[in-house]
Length: 201
Image (cartoon, rainbow, N blue to C red; front, side):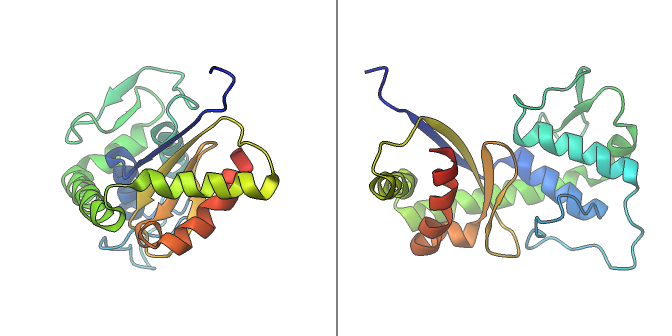
């Protein structure tokens, strides 16, 4: 039994990930360049002052730790940030600019993230009839037919997010983000997830 390939796919609209992206948008941080803005959240005006390089770098480290904490452990102890419950932790040293910048944004970022996660659960239950697993099983079966072998064991995390553009993006070594609208579209999602599974399996 142990030699049989195993695959593990976790799907979520994680509140910590949503908070990190909401803070990115509120602070005017541009990295990662390829990720679109979130819907239903104001985008900073084009003439607003750009985030400093230090702020962008500190946010980027926080983003990597949030998306894949095991792959990006902090070198120093982490501290929870007031106002974010237990959902935002920053390094005790080296993140001062980010800590100061996000403190006043806690209520709106937290509210946005919780509402977006609630919408994900409501719409995904309706869209998939509770059978999110089937979309992945079908893509893996299709991959196995195409290549003529069993899929290797792999792990994949899928964050379903309310981006303003449809698409799928790698946001970590084992993590992709997909627009919620695309995730609900069976045909489009199947076409988008298959190459991702092909890379891993």
